[in-house]
Image (cartoon, rainbow, N blue to C red; front, top):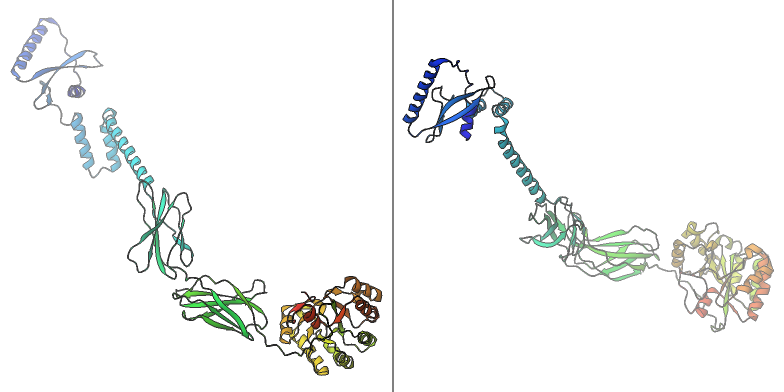
Length: 555
């Protein structure tokens, strides 16, 4: 049927037949029929095929005898021209080949010719097959892309300890998880260190590593369709040396700290860090020990009497000198050579079991009315007191100062001129006053009180160097404020307690007036009136420490 269809499609246009009339026409048609039948019998192995076509112009049927050779599978038109080699399907194919091979025809023109030479009925199977192939190809590419995992990128080290390294990397699209591998430098092969599954963050800490050792790491991504993607290794990552501990921290020499620690056979050396303990946000200074076998060192040049925090860490010789974790901090007070101060022995008449207080007087010496009257009252009742004096007044009132010594009073330092307070007080303000007192009495002061009670580390350090404890107060009589003898008396008697240190001033007449009432009243109530030093020893049960500030016999 297909070839019959092709023969019918490529037949020549029917030619109008001549008019058929009369006996001659009938006779001629008979002869033609006879000749046709004879031809059919002569063609052995051939069969007649009847093809009908329509000519729209005359709108009448035309007979065309077509012979098919079944053995050769060819079609001929007996009585007419042989099928043109350039007609039909084979002709179209030949024309396409010629156009495709013609160098003068552009690829676009070749494509246009291809579709022009084929009718749609012949074209659609090819297009359908091509479309299906394209769909399969796109699906295959998409499936492959969705199953493929890429390389791990951005791998970096975010932290190290003495036995672990923390890694981080960028997420990989389509990955279900990541394999982490590690290798100690010197080992031949990598070993799997762990697995990280999505959606966990792309980070992993490789643990149980050797201290002070060099490692290499890499990470690969994987999913259920693709074993793994590529990777980029991180080489030369060092674990830190193991933490050490301080075993000894002391200071027996002025301005020197001695420190000892546990050794580490893997360390190339040690880093000692130290800073003042009472300084906020103090910056640590460093001392390097470039020998891993050394386990002790001295830190020199630190401030005497100051307290320092000290810590030690081992290090290894990487390009950046990798320091291990610091040891726990330990503290020590730096030694200071203290001036020998002669304290009077404790008065045997003092009974530690009975209540006692220390009367104190600031801002002397004064040879005027108030200064002498205060000494008169104390001498009358056999009372003792401590006097904190200003250095610049000593030379002018030397006689008053000598009388204090004769009466057994305790000499105290109240700076050179009482003009500087707190941070403004210098070591010279203190030492200059001490030298002034010594120049008159031959004795250095054994006590110190800060102007306004404002004490700093620098003040304490200088007092420690000069062998002087510091004394604040328990009761403030406010004699400097009221300037009224009755109020001074009431403030004292209303707040006095066993072991108290009472603050007054030598320079006010109203204080001298109030003392005439205060001393006998305290004695009547059973109080013993002693110096600050004796108060600390007898009632507090301690020997006061130079550079330490006390508020009463108990604190």
